[in-house]
Length: 453
Image (tube, rainbow, N blue to C red; front, side, top):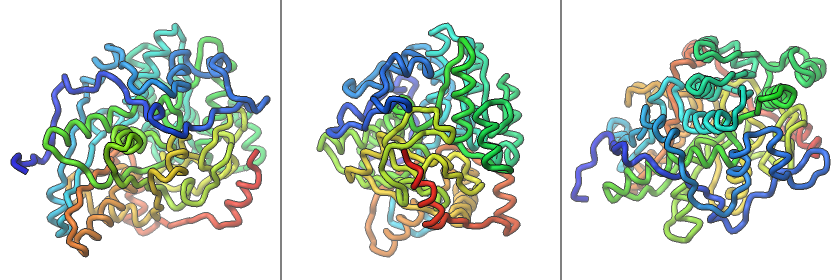
């Protein structure tokens, strides 16, 4: 390699992608369609338009267009915090004594502290363009809710957020950032909606789940004129918007003639992982290159590794469309772990199909192991990572250690989805030795899976 690799590879503003990349266009086996919960027939664009913005419905259903142009107004907004840097973790490599070359794509350099703003601004743009009053959504860790509140403030849209109750209580400052940007924030499940009251009656004292919050947000959107529901992960449209992560990472690598051997991302619903791997997976699907792609999920919510590939509801209230995905069952309410963004019971239909077809692998990580890796990384690289991102950090460190044992000089890329400055209650629990590693039993999972439609 003739060029010396800097600590941070920066692209120019002109290098911000002009189009999003749609992985489904290159997939031989397309993701199974969403089904109407009543008729069990594939959802039509007209049916989906009652819940989602019209332009987003087109993106959701598009399986043939590889590149979809990013509107100039969205690109102009991206310029406030993009391109995001690709960082060579020289300090981490030295500390580990590994021959591996470790890179991470850092998405935390905006007020939301995460990659979520990439899709939030796009969805708010299309809602405004359609002439809507506002949008509703759910949020787990609060990163998506924060990002959406920022995007709605920019376009002067009302924003109603249902925040998973355990995160609402654990992360009050994340909640206050949303309110600062003008959003209303309700702990879910709540007494505000019919489905919320039903869930509370069936599960008194529940700490909630993303599935519960989705049900409430959809109910409010469909019962209020001028509102639509928007989602921060799982859906095809979200993976499409997040492809800017991978497109920038690949452009930065190409600038120095580098090809990663493995790509590692945390996996909850799939937005970060799908965005990070997008152009690399495209090459893999087209037979142009090969990469080892690893999804890392919490042992407390193991959709890929212990779930079933089947049609299931995306929400606990069973009012949303059914998606064919790796799922633990829509009635599964995970333990109140501190990686709130990874507590969804299912996985993106696109990623589920790719995993099912063998294009990627999945592993789990225990909560205390994840926080050990997070603190190690923070002390060496100087960034306090989000608990979600730290799942990828944990496995990247493990793979780098394997390289030390074998002497292999592999190039590792992982996604650092955001910062952990709003997750200090979790770090406090870990530092006080009060964090546990709850893992659901086979019986618990079987009970939820037995209710699959």
